[in-house]
Length: 250
Image (cartoon, rainbow, N blue to C red; front, side, top):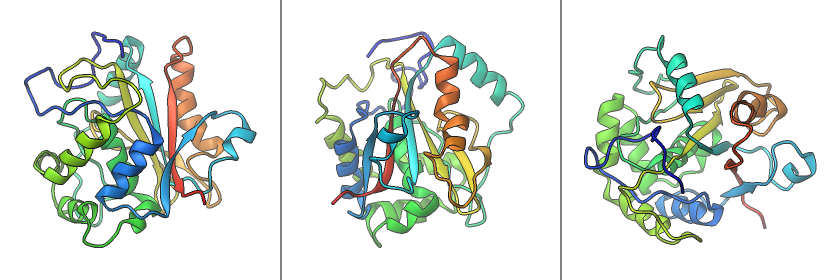
């Protein structure tokens, strides 16, 4: 993975650090299952966001979409411009529209994306009772973002499962302190139809629009508001990939 001056995480030594997680559906699925997600769900490769025949291989509805993209100067400029008028998110408790986690662990954006994917929308109903994920989410809900971050930093089961998964990728794992210019963002549809962009390095969750009842995160509208927006901005860079959380294949 290449380096860049627009590295999305805290500088080395300023925070805890994890080995970057490869966008590998099998590893991600094993990680989530180990933490307590039901075997009824798995992570799938999304081979195309424009070819209906390739999208048809993914069980529907897709409950969450994770986009891996290069952090460029163009992206950073637009991110900062969009974030500037936003207030820092302070949501907590059962009444908040979406559960959002602020990323304070260096190179943990893949893990944060997976946590956002399973903490929100229908996927949350597939978490096994009293599992590590169940305990983490229930402990996180009443906490404001800063305390949620400390909870994640101190959850040993999370660090252990992530370490195991990140060390088993198909490519040699970078060091936890390396500068990695690829970043994860998660898109989920909540029960009220809102499509949320969830990124732990933003000021908070971002509502991108309302989807109809029969539309999921791989529907034409959701892809237009999500991954296609990123691709349009960075059309010359092909280091994009997507994975989706959906039903397990037989």
